[in-house]
Image 1: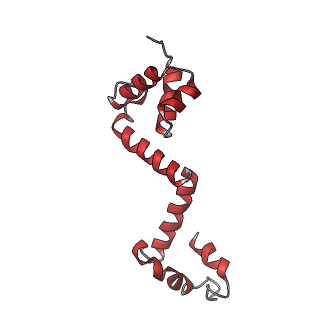
Image 2: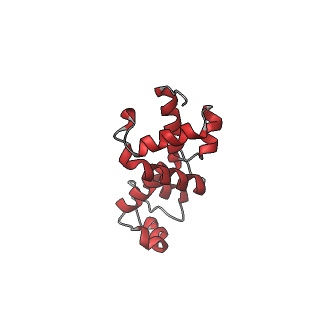
Image 3: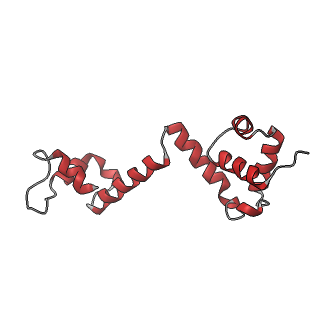
Length: 129
C-alpha cells in the first residue's frame, strides 16, 4: 500500500472538491487511482482528521464544483452574480419578475434627482452595484 503524506492527501481532497475526475487527480498528484479512491472514501466517511468538518458537505461541495465546471463559471463570477442579485432584491425586485427588472430599475432616481435609465444606461448598473 502506498504511503501518502498529509500534504499529498490534502492536495487530493482539494482536486476532488474542485470536480476533477480520479484520472485527472492521479495525473496531477502522482499517486495511484486506488490511493485517490481511498482518500476520497476516508473524506466521505469523515475519517480524514484534517478535514472532519468538511466530511458531511463533501458531496454537496463536489456537486457544486461540477455544476460550476459544466456552466463554465468561476467562483468569482458567482460572487458577482450574487452581489448583483442581492442589489436587485434591495431595489424591491424579485428574480421571478425578471421581465419587469428593466422598468423597475429605470424608475430609480440618482441622488442628484436625475432619472436613471435610457438617458444614462451606465448609471443603472452603477447604482445597482
